[in-house]
Amino acid sequence: MTIDSYQFDTLAVRAGHQRTGENEHSEPIFTTSSFVFDNASQAAARFSGDDPGNIYSRFTNPTVRIFEQRLAALEGGESCVATASGMAAIMAICIALLEAGDHLVSSRSVFGTTTVLFDRYLPRLGIETSLIDMTDLGAWKAAIRPNTRLLFIETPSNPLTEVADITELADLAHEHGCLLVVDNCFCTPALQKPLHLGADLIVHSATKYLDGQGRIVGGAVVGDKQRVGEEIYAAIRTTGPTMSPFNAWVALKGLETLSLRMKAHSENAIELARYLSDHPAVEQVYHLGLPSHPQYDLAKKQQSGFGGIVSFVVKGGREKAWRVIDNTSLVSITANLGDVKTTITHPATTTHGRVSDEIKAQTGISEGLIRIGVGLESIDDIIADLDQGLSA
Image (cartoon, rainbow, N blue to C red; front, side):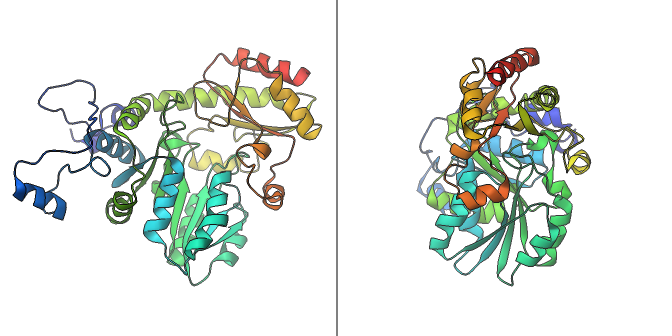
């Protein structure tokens, strides 16, 4: 059997690892900054690219390479480049594939720091961004210009779990000679395969579900050999925001249980969403597993599960939202997500705190909004803790 013939769960455990001469069972961690050459001729051939092999851990490290090959196999991509963070992955795409005078179109409903990157820092490089409603195909069509190079979406979105039709946007992008980039952080390849739906590039924050236990910071870009394996790789090699060998090893261990965890996160999240939907202190609940969600049918079509994010609006604005958060005792008050431990945060003042009030209003980031990254504790205990907060 070849690696291409294995199922997802087998790839998550086995892909990418080729045993060294030590015959190790678990993947090794190569904690070295550089690698030794047999002679000067081999060193010259490595640096010129004529002889593939390890040179320097900023851009060639065996442990990082195992993580890259495994994630590429899970996403169905040809190549993967690991980065120091999810934001480093997005920045690497922009540096490698865009130049002064280019334009990108992005959903407004993306991670707050992504919006800041597009709105504040890319203009300094001469790159313009248009932010539009992710679910409005007409807005996408209207925003595309002759110099548009990328369409960028995060689906499901953070924190309102909006869903974009990936196939529809991929067709639109390709019709205009653009690339579609999908942030697949919330679903991971365990629940969604954007490349199979027509996307060109996938972005990950390995910090979230790929690791799954809140232990590291990391990111990745997955796609084809030319754009990812050559162009983005070259940008990372030069600019240096690479994943460390130790973080790659930790993320590898996370991938081994990814499928199991994503199913469990999804099961807990729908139970919590149903509970919140019936609570008198809650105005609205955002979770893809609820039939009331506007993109419920689309999510069922392009995802194999609904994920672990539940957001909800409490009556009374920021004061009441903070009171709910402060009166929980089990869940962790932190802006991270994708952890086995349930997390709670107030997006308007944390993840989207640097976003303008105008964009927050346009994307539904209200003062009463709370986001839950549903973990793997007993769902009865999670609900009891939220009930304690809501009762306050």
